[in-house]
Image 1: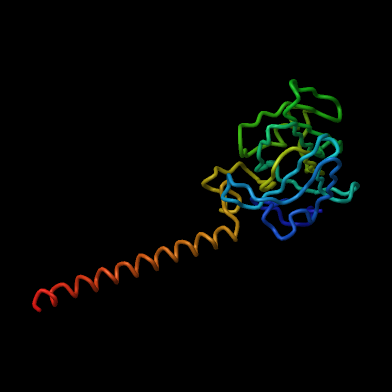
Image 2 (image 1 turned 45 degrees about the vertical axis):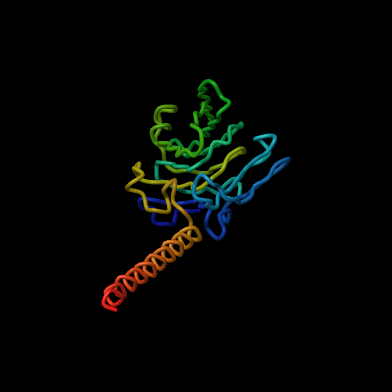
Length: 226
């Protein structure tokens, strides 16, 4: 899917504030929902919420075609995700230099790591609120299977969580080095416009108040002479 695209430092595959955040994703929701909502923890910005009574039956998966591959060669996978204090899991399918597809499954209800020929399951620890999950897929492939990472084939995110952005990178970025829209606390365009208008209104009010004070000060000598 992205194999013919120039893959530089950052490649985003989901942005909750975009016009079509699930354009390349298949979505399934049984006894749950997948929808955009606002989150008060990040300035009432739009986020994608996945919730369901069963994590296995509510998920999003990219690409839509089950036989296609994302073809992303960047080795670092990063997800800005909110802990809803419920069961949550995700799965990454990679291709290695032995032409084998391996799956990495991480969940907050798994207690031990298990490595099988085609699948590795591992526990996932999340802090309260918003988290930035970073996975070195090349290091994982080498440690688990003794092979070299070639590309990411598929990403599948299950309930229960809220998503801000999912992207790949050629190296790990600090928060300060990321573009504004990739940062965890960045406001969306509507929020930035609201803040801009509020600051503009405050500036206008301050200017009007200063003008009134200047007029009062200018009138005082005239009144004193009179």
